[in-house]
Length: 372
Image (cartoon, rainbow, N blue to C red; front, side, top):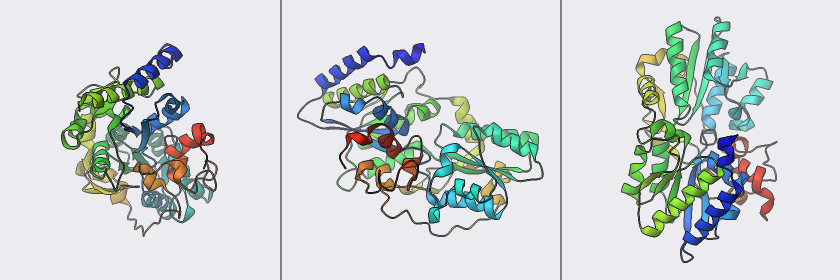
């Protein structure tokens, strides 16, 4: 517990809170977006918002991979399991996310579809090995963090000649989403002064890919770790940059993130995947070069090519504000469904389901502090 204790030390937190209060200029506002859902949960779990001056505000970004997946992709997966009779394997958070017509993977499983919750890509490969007569599809989601394990699974399947294994690829990329958020900031979008950069993603891609943020948009970035003192120190670093008129990419999470990132993981991703021309993000719409597909050399493992599926128009649940929350334009408590018909036991939107979702964070740690 040594390292956890060090980054949750009460006295150090008090010192950082005092330093932030002293640094924050009372004549200006500091609107800081934490891009990653892990940061959102750290902020609420440890009450960090209560330690900030009134003019320092955290704004929740679209950094939850389950939340940004559009409902049509879940419908696609359900169709694979129900109409093509495949065994569909995916991670737990995705099981209860609402799809079209109030369906979900969990409801499809209850109705008889062979949908299995797994903990790693190794589980999906094992299931394929154990039942060679049945097609097994891995429902791959996530940012750059979970993409290398999917690449490894593709290489293992190829090496072992697993002809009954394929991948439904939904991996997305962080920089294009960040670019879109910043490009739409202003009167019609969210107003931002700085970015708390994602940590797990940055472990893979490094800090260099965020250089466009200060260069094109004039906003500072501090890559922040997930522990409460990480977030507080990163907040202080952003405030100091803004006070001094600096605009740079700084790295608070130096114990894990380097400028270049993980070159081996990047090489795996470059071998197995290629950028999609466009991909739909929940709340952000269709973004060019923002997601990955399997490279042509791995096309035989691509479930979208192996199984023909047509998905019609999918409509969001009426009244659900997940799209606006993911853009940082609204907070969970701005949604009329939050805490009424939408709860973790009965989620209407992805932000209430995911362990990294903003609505789940509000519900779990901060909902009762708000009068709504």
